[in-house]
Length: 278
Image (cartoon, rainbow, N blue to C red; front, side):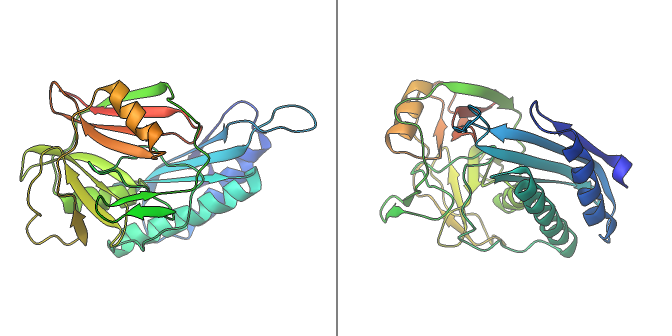
């Protein structure tokens, strides 16, 4: 099985770690009662930290992508060092595979705190944080977290344009869980509007759309609903709002097209933008 695991290391990561990662991942997959294919592991560093020898990595970011019985899954973990990263990613993969093969169930909320938001994070028109809340606005549904965000506006360092999948909020929530996102951007066919589901209390799942609409009919996921449509903002306005409020992500609509967009903080502290392709 080990030869079927592709490991990609960024510069500065020991090549010997690839063999360890391949063996540990293969052991997890070998014990699963499922067909697991397309196993890809990516290991990189997060930021820099002062050290006696100069600047070094402040942490390790590890990601595993795979197909389990034909369904795509993803696990992403941040850790202080390579050993912890490998422990966390193998345990995360074991848990994710078990969840996918045993049938979907709502994930507990709140989940354990992460040092940074994973890829494709977003929030409702009244943005909400993931991780353990520090304070909350009971009217807007806004939660904040005690993370060391950079001060002041930050540049957008990564942009992605995506053809959004048309699916129900239930399906979007299940995809969000399988792909280890704290948010998923999609198009809601019931309202024909772009929308997000994201992880926040009290149920752990919330739905927001670019245009305000009623709740979905008979959802299987315990969704709460944002009562407002997403604000129409320019990129500059979105960056200012996110950074001023120290938010991990922001869901908003493009002023011209009205299409949904997600501005989010990357693990390295920079900003990323996901935009619906027109």
